[in-house]
Amino acid sequence: MTPELYWTILTALFTSVLWAPHIIMRIIEMKPYLAFRDPFHDVSTRAPWAQRAIRAHSNAVENLIIFAVFAFAIQILSVGTALSALAASVYFFSRVIHYIVYILGIPWLRTPVYLTGFFCQMVLAATLFGWL
Image 1: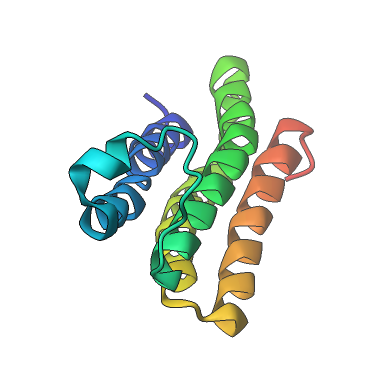
Image 2: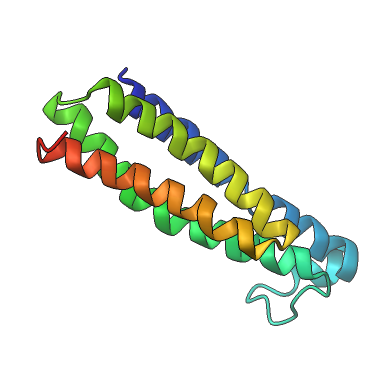
């Protein structure tokens, strides 16, 4: 397994559990019976951090698609480099930090952390085109 693929799988695993804090908060606020009867999430949580958590999860899913396409293409084409491996690992940690910062509501830190992940995606794309 290439480093790019390893970090993609780890990122997907991390992203797959990001919904949990929001749902747990809904259950606490609404009680299980009402929370499970609200399949369309018509009732939002009162906790701002939980609202940010679901937005952070959506953002992680949206960006995972892009990252995964690049990482799998690197795997398939066997064009990985030390720099693309580093970018994949930095991407993972930037997404973890992004989620935490997003939930805490620190906008001045959220954007630079997001841009770090974006830059890592661009390193993977540049690797695919042979620019690095």
